[in-house]
Length: 388
Image (cartoon, rainbow, N blue to C red; front, side, top):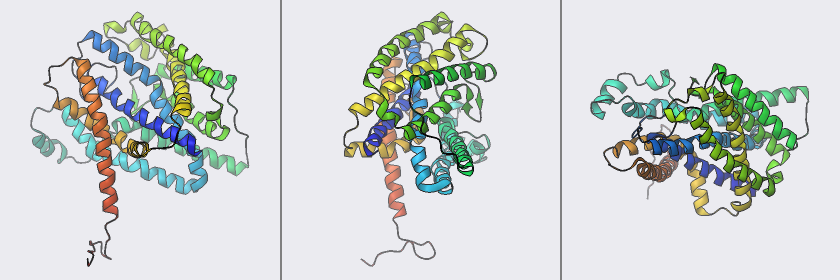
């Protein structure tokens, strides 16, 4: 278990870096929504960055949900339902509230293109309505934490129901049939749900068009923990997936181009009764599973050694870096808006800078909070000074 967790810690750091780069790429032409955009008229940059974001979208958040599902049973077993829920509400609820009250107003200044000074914006738009972010339920990229809270509630309900009925099922074995059933279920569910909620349509900040895979992978993570799936993943299968992934990564943009994406209209792929919607509903989970399988095997076999100080530092700061990366990416790009570079070069600069800043500022926040919590307080909350 300890060794597996080392590789999963490193995988989470990798995924966090990818999230920061993903959102940085949207600024300069990648597909997706963000708070600030530049250079959206460069066809070559748009194609490359949209391929990057499109491929990322197939796996990176789903793999986050898989890892979260994997660590959930042990935490529940150790804490029990009440303490488990309390811990999760604190760990995820506090960042959500802070985002709505503090981060969302900062991002809105750039996203609405406010023409006045930042100080004027704070006086007229923020201080006059300090709860606006909470009222609008503005949680941006932290929709992931909100979704996890919903998944945790579902897991608690499942465990409680099983315990009340005295049901104890054996672990699910990882078989070819299980893989095929998962893929078929997600493909059909993708197409069906996107008829009502096309990709890009949000309900409480959640894009339901992607949730069949998210739910399936969270459940797969739970099953993987119980059934020891990580040990069962095969290197030979990972190699087959690697070549299949290469083929699909080539087919993905080719299919998008054939369906009209080069004209700037991808709505047919997002949902509806069209071959484009069928194509996306199929290749999305297929490529996502292939890349996820390859990464899990790669990190298990090659990145599962003893944790170094850098591994501990990166892993400890990945969660906070994820929480704060949105304003860092946005304001780094905004600060460099007058830099006359090619959009791909600016993406590289902003992306790398944002990664470094996200982890560095995360470390400062965590160290500051640690120092604050160690300050001895007197009976009325006043700082108690040492006689030394």
